Length: 89
Length: 89
Image (cartoon, rainbow over the protein chains, first blue to last red):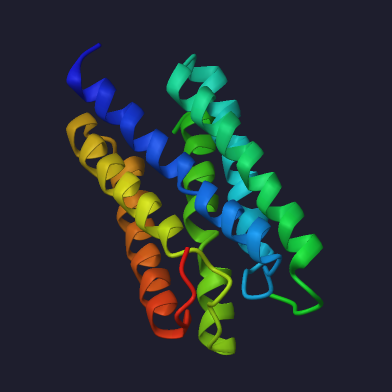
């Protein structure tokens, strides 16, 4: 693997795994009121399109990271729906 | 522009612009306590690496979206530091 591909994989790893601390925090505190629900919805639709784009490009990093990120993102949406209360936004 | 490039641009637009509702919500409510600070830090470092990768690839969409997303992400970090209170995570 050339160093630039490795750099791309590292970038995807970080932007994907970055959602985990929010999941842990929300799961522990059972509070997601300050989080915007529109944020993970927009990002989730974007990730789904990245995934389709990755399948077309036959790009393993794009497919791999976006599939994982989409799953994490859906967990965040579920946590907001469960613990977000009634506050809109 | 071929339709697949347009799809990639749309994907980047959505995953970038997705941060705006969180900024609006945080700015209005002045509450960011439920947000993880580690999340935008990890994602921000990842975006910076995507940006470097995009400069190497000479990919305008990668450079454009990650530069914008990085700026939005830094606003979220600033809002968490300002309104996040003392809760860790």
